[in-house]
Image (cartoon, rainbow, N blue to C red; front, top):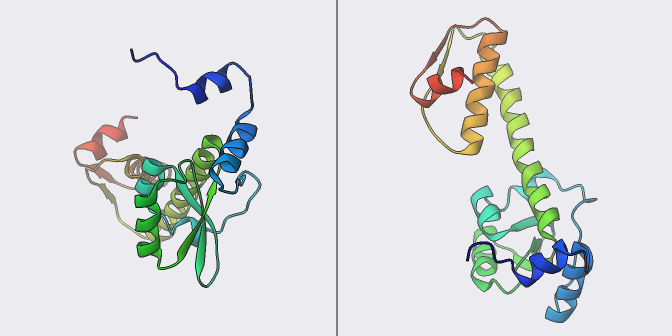
Length: 173
């Protein structure tokens, strides 16, 4: 049935082991070093090495790089396809670490949040002198948040606004 939990989910839910200890032990068993991401300041240029869709789908983030290698934290260090894809895409040898789902999800969230803040700054700079704002249709969480930001900017700055399709629907939010 759909309500079945994995062994991992069960031991964590029952409090038999905490997440960090579980993934540290998994790393030791797999011969892969464990890393925590929560206290790392990761530059945007390094986070941007892995596309957000890939980061989400494969629970993987880049957190450091050198001239020849890139350090990646992932849930499944045996995911050879993803590791090979990243090696080819980035052009550096991935050094694989295991990390907790919480750390990886939070890092991906911060990555998106930084992108949205940059978009807001660009909207404010680029739209100060505009006569009106057109918000077209389109989908995806980042697209929706960007549209809402543009709509909010139009309202707060008393700019004429035309929303098309999803752009108009979001105006009512």
